[in-house]
Length: 380
Image 1 (cartoon, rainbow, N blue to C red):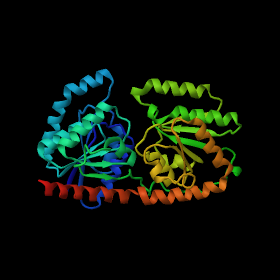
Image 2: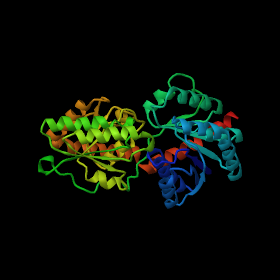
Image 3: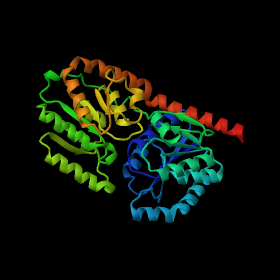
């Protein structure tokens, strides 16, 4: 099988990591996977694709954004970019196209024009209604296969009967267990000089970084003196939010540090004592999966698949969104119950190996491709 993964947003993050991990596993079954990515803002993604020895085509694809100048450009070049994709799909003779995330409309339309089977991966629950409407319309008329990454994503996009005829499958995002492998024995909190509480998140509003900071402030006032690390890159289109976060950190008396993008996330997590996800909306979130795989105690807001994969107060702690006090209370609970932390971390690790192992997820993707193509052929 010859498969093409198309991504109109080349900024490297969770969706791009998922694509690479799945492609690496699919390649082991002697299938060919190629990538089409934008020229702009995709240097890191391109580097990782080439390191994994996949073929990559760079195009002047315009990603969808609501910034006025970029939105105008997106609209102007929309049909031309579809035309380019059609020409490449035709020349390369792909057996399957995969569009990676909701606003990847061009790949879906191009594959439909040529009659190539197409899988659309949906992994969010926060896009505005107009994007959701366009997605539903295109998914229905193209009868593409749909992969969703959590039940919350299903409820956001598929509730009701509008897309009942589309092939659908839930597949969690993968984690490479060979890299996210716990190497450091956990030390009892009472024996530590300083406890490190961290999060891994881009500095964007949906990640709820302000609630992480407020959590630190609450704990500081209660005389819990920890070190707080925020690993994640700043986004050009979210400068106002970055400024807000830096201001909040400066005003705080807690030891909070923005450490920027971290190349070695497993090593960063290895030195973390408690991992906190303060997001207000997620499909996964994959950073929680990675922390679980690294055998770390996880506190997370009730976003995405968290309530599907975490047994509350047994393999992690789930709190309401936008509730800094609940996050602080959960941290305090773990500090006061160090023995629970060991069993919680072990259960989280076992669960993550069962659910998110990249080898297992890659096989699920390949199995889904075959099921979708067989079902599609029967209906032709």
